[in-house]
Image 1: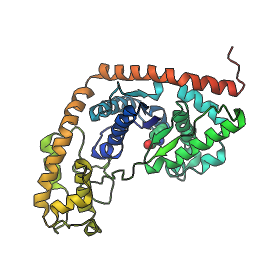
Image 2: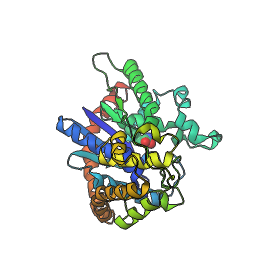
Image 3: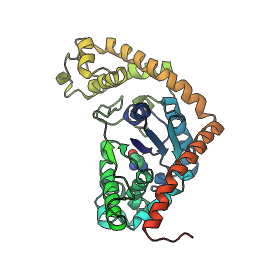
Image 4: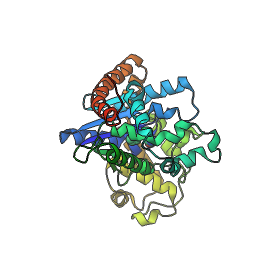
Length: 339
Ligand code: TRP
């Protein structure tokens, strides 16, 4: 089993990033290592230039994201952790796969349609071919499994289509160039909502800092934010069904469940009938106990640019080594002469 996954480097990491994606990566890292497999995790910095961006922010966000991943438990000795920009084979393979990907396939991608909006003529070509780079990211390493959120399923299917067509067109049946990767979509990929509005996703771009728990928040800030979180006047129900139509209550209970590892029903078995005056302090303490060690590591690492760069450099060297054989095979299959 070889798992490969990427994440775009964004700044201001929060509880939603942790419970949504990062924590799942850590779990998979440990499971895969126990089974003798391998995990590769990378920062999709090359993908980040498909949208308007500020170069200095991209560089800062890339390093901040590495600090967060390591603080959350990605271990550079267990996983190969790197950024695309230091492994030129990603961009090279993308170009080679551009000969196989079809305009019609890319035109159907919902992320392209959403992000380009009405202004397709003004969108970058990188945004259009984004899914081909994503296919290169995983095919380059012969990934067998790719952990992604539901929203990336279509891109994974495209990667399979590209691999399949390439193998059909340029390889013999008994010696395919690419492995077809399977997506792994976590069953209840925790969807963490704003603390101020239970119908909006927790987001780094929400103008109110009270809407989210940042990985940089200290214990007092966390307790304050939970205390001030929006709720309703009813006590908690004793079963999940009672949370329907109560998005703020559902969100807080969901966070408690995700952090404690309990099901929503068993959280409610403990707290059903109680008001938020009792539940919120318990949630705040749970958050502090889970996040304090991450916070300490994160804050310390974030300032250590040379340590972060060393982690990325070492990860990239390992990634390049794994990438070369597949890239060589791809050039050869296409009849490209390299001396
Ligand atoms: N597009 C993914 C996202 O926005 C990030 C990504 C880039 C990725 N390359 C990948 C995810 C390869 C999995 C595999 O979440």
